[in-house]
Length: 71
Image 1 (cartoon, rainbow, N blue to C red):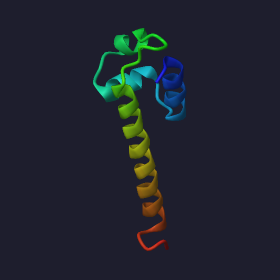
Image 2: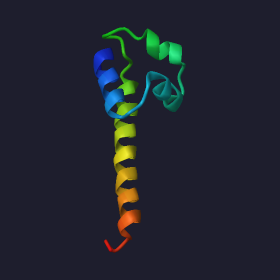
Image 3: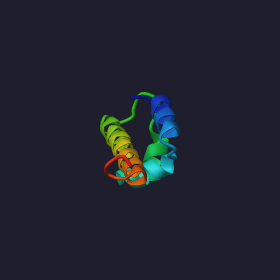
């Protein structure tokens, strides 16, 4: 993942680089200092985790609004 791709993904997830750093447990300065082609591979895994978590959260919230039986 490139720095540009990371920024785009974070935008889609409505997260700032600071939010991502806090979520991932790393320093904000580290995230800011990554160069275009030096983003660590683990970042891709964390982004995928966030995407799956948000999708699951959306499904759960929709089910709570509808009710378990869709009513």
